[in-house]
Image: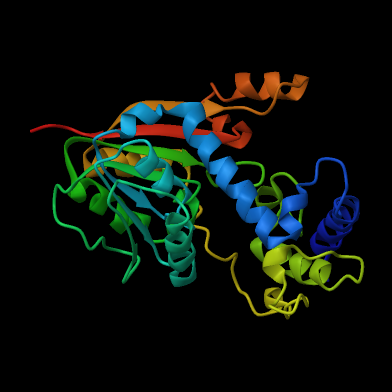
Length: 295
C-alpha cells in the first residue's frame, strides 16, 4: 500500500469509528431498512416542497424519472396530477413503488414501468407536461443520451424539476459510510478510494449499513475488492450538464445553488456558491427548472 492509500485509510478509519450507530450527527436510519425507507419518503417530500409548489403538479401529466420506491410519484398523484408514470431501471424498486402506491387511496392514474434500457424512454413524443428528477441525476450514466430523451417526451412549454448533488460536492463520491472525508475524490485517486473502501469494510469494528446486509442480516461479501471504478456515478459537473442542456435545446429557467447549514461554515459556503470556479465544491444541492421552448 502506497503513502497516499495509507494516509487516506488512516483518516477514513478514524472517522468511520466515530460514526457508528448512535454517534452524534449519524443518521440512524441507515442501519435499518424499514427506518431508511421511512426517512427517504420524508426526505424526498421535503426536497420537493422546499423548492417547488405542489400546486404545480395539479392537472399535469407527470413523469417521475428514476422513481425509486415511488415517493414522488405518489406525491404527484396526491397533489392532483392528471396522470403519473414512474420509471426506474431497478425491477425491485418498481415492485416496492407499486406496493407503496397500493397503500394510498389515489384517484390519479398512476403506473410504474421498469425501463428496458438506460438510453431511451419508452414514451411517445410530447406526452409529458412535467418531468421530475430528484436525487438521481448523478447516477444517470447515459446522461448524454437520456437528456435529449427528456426533451423529446416533453410537450412544448413542458418543464423538468431537478434536485441534484453534483460530482464535485464534498461527498459527491457517495462513499460517506466508508470514506467519510470531504472531497476525497478530489484529493485521492479512484484506485486509492477503492482500496480504502475494501480495507475499511473488512475492519471488525465497522458496522455495515442495511444495504450491506443480506436477507439474514449478515454482512455481504466485500465487493470493493472486485471493482475497478466507483459504482453508478457519472462524474457529471454543473458546467457539463448546462452545456448539454444548451446543446439539447432545454432552457434553464431557474438555477439555485445552496450552501451548507446555518453555521459559520454554512454562511461561508453560501457565499462561495456564487463564484463560478468554486461553486460546485461548496454546494449542498443544485435546483433546476428546465423548460422546453414552445415552437
